[in-house]
Amino acid sequence: MGMWSFVKDAGKSLFGSKAEAAELPKEDAFKQEVKNLGLDTSGLDIKVADDGKVVVSGKAVSQEVKEKVILAVGNVAGVAEVQDDVPDAGKAPIFHEVKKGDTLSAIAKKTLGNANRYTEIFEANRPMLSHPDKIYPGQMLRITQA
Image (tube, one colour):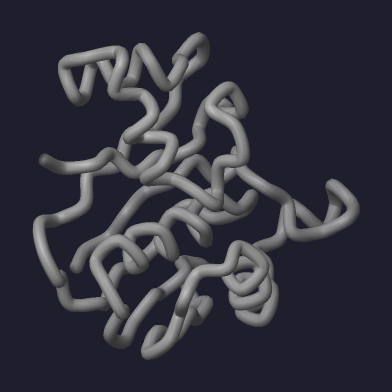
């Protein structure tokens, strides 16, 4: 449980126009995005608080699903913070913010000690990532834990 910061101006837009993307999406848009990614949100609730942060609460089917839902809603344009009100089912998640010039191999070397472990990071972030080369500055990634 905790608060996770994201880059508000980075991420996927759930709207068609840039003017709309400047606004924080409504709860239904977040729920639809998570559903479109095929994540099992059984037992979870996603709300947009009055102060503009997104709150994920309830009980997740697994720690992995919890972390992926937090990333799915946090990596949406307009989101600066996601409040995690879901009890931990394991170790606290490790997230990494992608910087300009980063590759999954470079991130794997920095966080896991071996560039060849980039596939672990890619798999840990599916279905949000569709290809190992499709990451962008400001995006938050889930780092696997040994």
